[in-house]
Amino acid sequence: MKILRFVLMVAACCGLVSLGHAAPLVASNAKVRLVPPVSDSSAAYVTLRNTGAQPMTIVGVSSPVCRKAMMHRANMEAMPRVTVAAHGEMRFAPGGDHIMLMGLRRGLRVGEQVLLLLHLGDGSEMRFNAAVVDMR
View 1 (cartoon, rainbow, N blue to C red):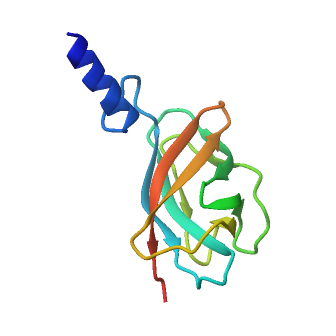
View 2: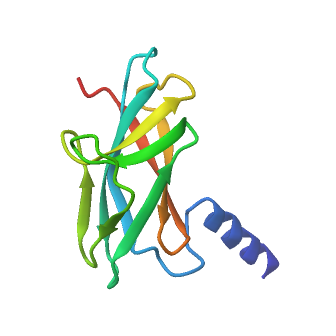
């Protein structure tokens, strides 16, 4: 029984199973724009789907690959918070709302997985990976 408990704990830490309730916010089609090595900023895009019955509010974003990350509208205006309606969807997409990754700590490589963290209004966070893609 101790071995099973240990295996479940390790799997939960790796994101393979959930020992609690499933998070209602689901990320899909997550990607980060490849930029030239001299650029210190990039953009991330993702579709967020709220499978829950309550709205989910995102109050911030961060990533270990940059010094600062922010949610922006298409016109580059900062969005301090974003609410995804119950059973709704929010898209961060090229030419529209997006996530800015500013002060990149290093160059990015095509195919690399970038960790993004969404900080939620209830104090929790959602983690997901976004693939670096050449969008030219």
